[in-house]
Image 1: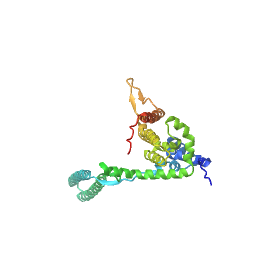
Image 2: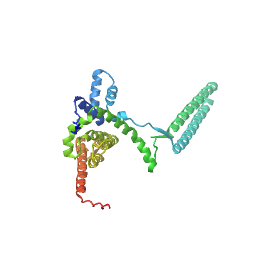
Image 3: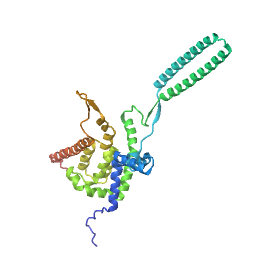
Image 4: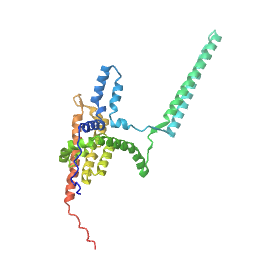
Length: 327
């Protein structure tokens, strides 16, 4: 009986696979929380007569970073700040009491010159009580502010750590992101999203960087999160979908301007709002646009990947030292 040794047919990418791929692109790219989508959500909320934040929250559910979340803050006592704030509060409290006492004394002297001493005495007593009450309330409020200012916040890994221990704590912060990304990819792979991506980008990525189309989803994820991009790349390598050479080229692509969209829009885009005053008194802005900035970033990402590709080509041509003959 002869076995069928013909290679298995590649899996087909049906309509469901491309729908899953579309969801993956939206989910990992951050489109659902971008400004155009927020503006659309605001317009839609006005038409439906609902609060815009509710519509924005619904859209944000389809974003990787939103669902990935963030760590809470740990309250850390600050001994120096606490001592300084307490001394300042005590000094201000003493000054307030001295001022109130002088005010009461002045009113008492004025009351003695008035014929209605009894009425003036009652007024002084009431004033004294009000001044003491106000001073007590002011002192309590200042003490509360001093206690509040005597604490700082930080994440669970703390501050000032070094060495292997700090590296271990940092690795713990990456674990939720990596596990979450791998779980989402497992679901998308089940529905054929990776096969659909491979079919779409196979020729393009081979020509641009010499890597297979399977890396398309990992590439999109890396634009928003360096952790997700690295985790997906490692998964492709472990599954044998990437060779060592292709992994190195793709890693170089991600290394330049990691998490491009998130980092640039979160911090770099603020530079475009800077202005300067020219010699003639006119105000000038930064002479570029977000589109040009992204074009430069992506150009050098592809440039870096091909630079690594060129280096590997030369390294492969380098004559290898022959191994010694074993007896």
